[in-house]
Image 1 (cartoon, rainbow, N blue to C red):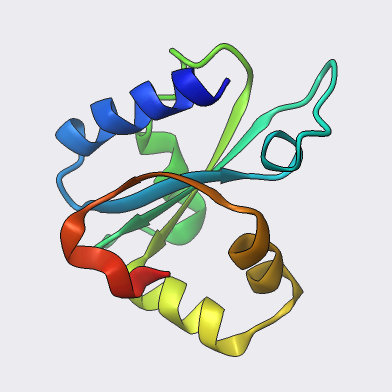
Image 2 (cartoon, helix red, strand yellow; image 1 turned 135 degrees about the vertical axis):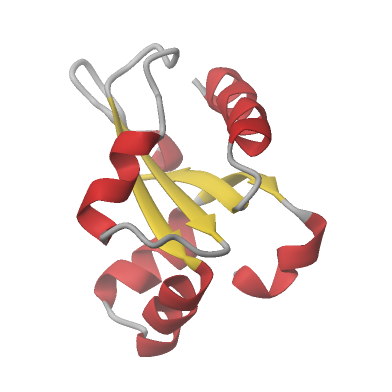
Length: 109
C-alpha cells in the first residue's frame, strides 16, 4: 500500500501545485489494517476556497487499490488544528506517515 500511496502523492503534487504535504494515518499507518480497511489520507494545501467538506472530492484516489478517504486542510487550518492540540490532532501528529512534502513547507508539521 505504501508504494501505491507514494506514487499517488507524486502524481497529485503535479496535478495540485498548491499541495504542500500528503500522508496517511489510521489502520495502514498503525499496521493493523485488515479486510475492509480504507486508506485515510491527509493533504495540506497552501490555500483552498472550497468548504472543507467538499475539498476531498477534487482529489481522484481511484488509482489506489483500496477505498480512500481524503481530508484536505489549508496550511492555516492545519497549523490551527495542531496548535489546539486536541485528540485528533495528537493522533495525526503521532501516526501520520508522510509521503510527500514540498521543501518550502517544513513548518507545516
